Picture 1 (spheres, rainbow, N blue to C red):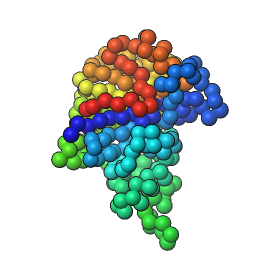
Picture 2: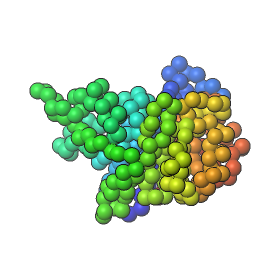
Picture 3: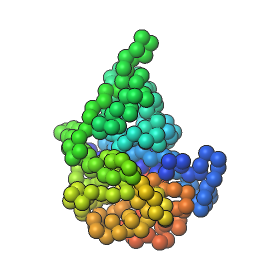
Length: 258
């Protein structure tokens, strides 16, 4: 069956608009400027796999009419990527089966420290998740039947490393990043889709900005690039006007087939 990739949320850590209603340079009349925090999803009718559980994951799953979650991959332990974790509970209750979640060593420690009830049985509540450590450059063959493989690559995100994910050697998802290490660039060349962090116009110490991404695209030569983690100074229609034809801004709910 065809594998569908969906951008559940493409907004930066405070979303667009912010909680105080500030839209920045984004036109509130354009629905594609309404951005929840970053998460993404793979689905093929049998399996549903999440990348991160943003604080907006409940709204995102309702919007996409998601009925089951089979696995979750975490890029890193920041709040805007993890703090929707409790909303996985209903999927455990429906199926009476722990959901496998994958994370690197640091993210695993963070999740178990701050959300222990998700992983440890207690008197009143059963654990809902089973956490598995994923190593740098490890490729997991999620399902031979469904032909889904996910490779995890450590990338730089300011003062920490986090994970980017390459699905079936054709699509990369790197939502929080400001550098791909030179030794790992080979995994990112000539992809069909590159979904990548593009926070704003000006420099940021933990994220790519627009000029960074354009330079990277020229080097990596993906067939199509989709910008995510968009801050409130990047209006959707403004980006459409200035970007090369093979580079597009994301919007919540955007999907394509891998």
